Image (cartoon, rainbow, N blue to C red; front, side, top):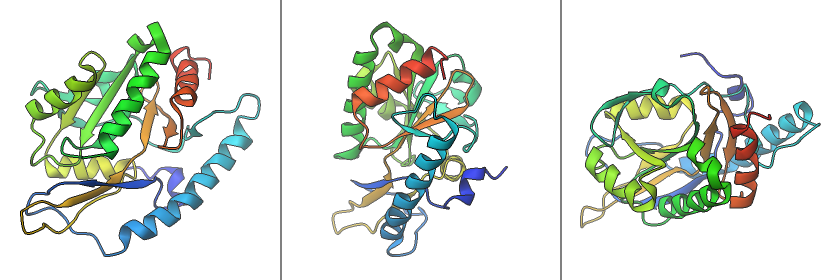
Length: 233
């Protein structure tokens, strides 16, 4: 896998928020305090990226974090929420908003999806040129049907759920520096999942362009998306 130049800025890129519910028994375990260390390094990484974007795009600045040239293109082999194999090539031709989450998430994921619905509403007719890809970090429970029901509750027309094997999900998460960890099961069999909350924006050619966090407003996201959709970047 080609190392992206963004890794030289900081090995941990993106903000993480806590989501809850349970992993497969064989899910990988990460070191204690990993989330806290990552959250701290995120602040430094985001500042470095923002500074870089300011240097290279002074003529017309972005509202979101500019990651052009610093993350790999949209490339994967997964399973769609219709049960059919899909690849990154399947989604070229539209601007893709990629989010890593899971259907049992009690707060962060539904809040993020709700915010993206606001963004689509602000885009008006341009929303037809945008696709939301909801990639699960809990493939043991998130079957294609579960994902279809979940994204369909928000917007079946513009959103699609994607799943895969543990290896496929882990590899893809590493590719885009996505952090997630499964916590210890509670006595009732439930557990917590801490995962990245960022939304990745890929242009029509599948190039990584922008990163939106939970601090970015729907207005800010919509403003930058219009530039990507209209290819005025």
